[in-house]
Image (cartoon, rainbow, N blue to C red; front, side, top):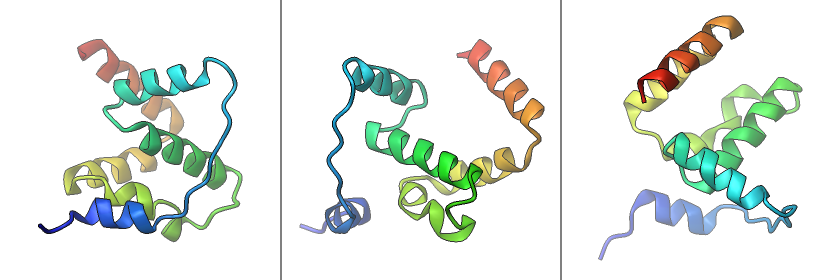
Length: 100
């Protein structure tokens, strides 16, 4: 049986065990469900966003593990979203939240 690309890459990906404060795992699970992502993808996306915002992570290599899990349309949408000014990002999120 052939392995999927994501299962092969997840096996070879760096792993790090994190102890979470009480209640944080449930909060991460809730947010991940809201954005239709795995908890791992949610954590990686948030770490990536923080590191990029602080200038500690180069743009071209930062999101490789996260983008491997995205459909091409999702990747394109994410690129467009990131180019929007913050007020427009917030407005788009608010609009999407009212429709769900």
